[in-house]
Length: 239
Image (cartoon, rainbow, N blue to C red):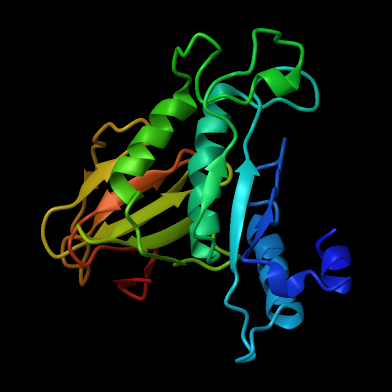
């Protein structure tokens, strides 16, 4: 559709390019970053500004997960996990605006998926995704930059988000558990998906300057600390 309207001359009149990259029932790691990169490449090629580079932003104006109904519903816990993982992945892909669908369930029919996308139930009782959204907004809502720290062949995903209060690492696995080391210049605080402070196993391996171990799962966690870093232990150092 975007190609069609650009082909008839509408490109110069676009202020932004908006997409609805739903993944249901798949996780956001199922090519969300790749699809956003493909759209961005098309914008740069087909909608250049007079200076040769497109100044149009790429926005996600609708995305979400339904927790009941037909068409592959996900569990409420997975909906909360996917929300944070989607937003962080999109921010790191250069998407400054993400509109989550939707605040409250559109009805009480549990057999109809369209009525079950809400962060809350129809009566405004919060689902886990509501809490996850609140925690995410509090910790990284003011992020001005985001970048991925891990490659595609890593056993986990980790992103660094920068904001005025300080840097935050958000990390998770797609499946199962994976242990990593975290370190910082000073205290480290780890917050889980629901906003609870997590304990860490303290370890002081040689040459790692008191790094601590942390077990990652499919539920994203937030690691806060001055000059915080995350990685696996290789050659006596965190990489």
